[in-house]
Length: 630
Image (cartoon, rainbow, N blue to C red):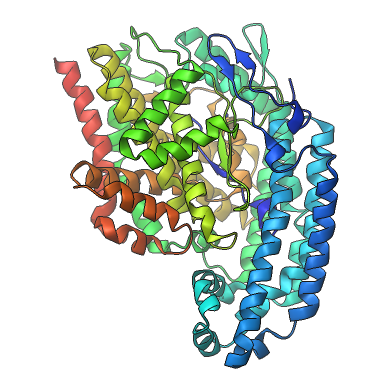
């Protein structure tokens, strides 16, 4: 619970939900890697953080961080209440927070670099050892910071309120108030220390085992041996035989490793149950709600609204898609298949870049200028490589540096949307960085706003430029599928997690039971027009959010519905919307979602709010049905 630099070892960077030659060091990365028909794909330049994993600056920064933490503990442990008690002590308390923030940035830079190197090639033993060693060292160093938030929360509320009269302390008020929200759940110092130290050999070790296992898996598809990302990509292939072969390869390999995935899932669910029980969280998802700074009733309203919408959204859409394929129901591996008789475009890298930048620029030149830096300054790693982390993410690193984006770019229209999504995160992270290490991070519910909004801008730009009726239909269908994947599918994931974590309280779940729960929630969300074929029951096994960030997934649905409502305001707004939008992003974690949405006339606590967002998806399905009638 206490906030220390090692939060970076557990917190995953913002990621996009999935429908997935090793870099030896930062010096070896060049922008010249090429995939067939895609052009030169960039590899990130991590030298802005450190030159290589052997750079002497890493050891020096770790040593400096250790000295800073030891000095910090010596200067402030046991004295915070004394400093808060009188105006004479307020400057010392403000200086303590400033020093705490500075060491967060210093140690955060090292762990960010280690995690990015590791993500670039999780199968490289040198990278895995480097990442593990840095995790352990920072965990040990930051033990000397552990007292700070615990002691801060033991100060009387009235004293803290009075201390906020100090101008420097007043600046940190949002962070202090956030920390104090965790007060009811913090434990005695020695227990917090034990939780902290054992994280490296506990959940962090299981996270790492999962990552390395997934990266090392290989799938046999029609005579080819593939890693997970290109295999998942084949589920969008034009050939039904290829899609089926890919799905069967995935299920076969997942099933062969199901004992390990079941153990990881059970262990981490039990680990969370122990932590929740000791801290006093009443509900399995309450810790996530607290970290997201969102009320449980708001999330419950979202979940209820989405689940009630299944028949008029996902069920209706997949029935329509099955009709396009001349079937009553589609096999599970055809869920994201491209439309028949419509040529799927391949986007070269330069075309994808120009498409996203032009969409961003039409909305806000400043937004495009920030996004352009990711290309010009090599903050993006795009190629698919053996051992590379699957999927995509934007890592904020630390405010004194800049974000990095990881993609597995393969030229499909969805890859262009993924680029737009992750650049949205990146722009958000750049804008929020001036708030500093303590207040730049944004709760997950709002962290997905910029990414989904970036996707929407890019989609509308592409749609406006498309005049061919078949292509427009294909684009609308792809967008509806993305929105269903982001809203319906993620709420189904959340439902799955709730069932798993609830049942885990009374004992381990077998692989068969996990598969049964998975099929139940998928059948409910996808509807009768998707036939869940044998083998699909193991597809829960590869979802990384279940492992790294329990209950993260509802943030995608929150963000998508919020953006749908926000975009409706934008379409009817007068001048000044872009400035208000960028100001919202620049606020980072300094303001509650209700305060940030107020200038747009939106309120997530209003029951009608979610219906507004969901109705946009419904209207797009209406358009597809109308195109069928013409």
